[in-house]
Length: 301
Image (cartoon, rainbow, N blue to C red; front, side, top):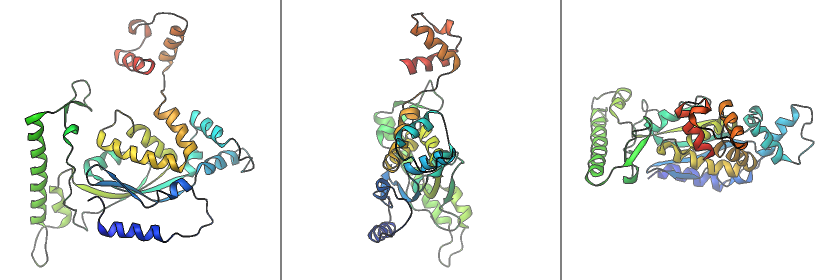
């Protein structure tokens, strides 16, 4: 199960004893606070804490040119302007702290986003649980022949069963050996910090991850994208749902300009202008490489 009984009891206790505060709260986020949302087979995300809301973004933007918080109308328009023109610091006024349970190989992708504060469960001090990510059959795919980072066709029949059996048996065997090597009670054994090297990359870990909204949007733009690896994309999509309730104006602008938008190069813009004038443009006359042209066609397509 994603949550241990102790973690669930802690959540129930926290949600049953609300605290009064003078600081600004976001009603949409209050509904999510402490709740765990399942991701993959044993993972989850849950909000531990947050700071700021849409108004905090606008407040920071307006104080920079002397207006302070006097004008509170047209917040959505201001936020869209900030997003449209790639302003960053007003969005840094909001922060979120998440508790995430995820497979180690997903964590290694995630940690490449170095603009956050992270504290991970330590397998030097504690013993990791016997929990592994085992993909659903429809997530077992062959290597893409066009993209070295992507997946191709889904494996079928006996081949899918063969791969699943390897994943399950290898995970179980590695964990059995991990347990066998550990020092147990009065029995001498290998130190935890060494025994952990035998664990597979699909074993689950946990961490607290704190990030400001500007850098969170950068994470979500890459990891909630359709081209991102599915196992990290589902975490990003779960976070998107929370952020949409936390800062609806900011998330709406992000969804429009980043997730649903596109950036065009100077050559691509020139081609688009020529097309709008009725000129026929091909890859050969565009000045773009085959890869650039293919991506351009995908945008205007």
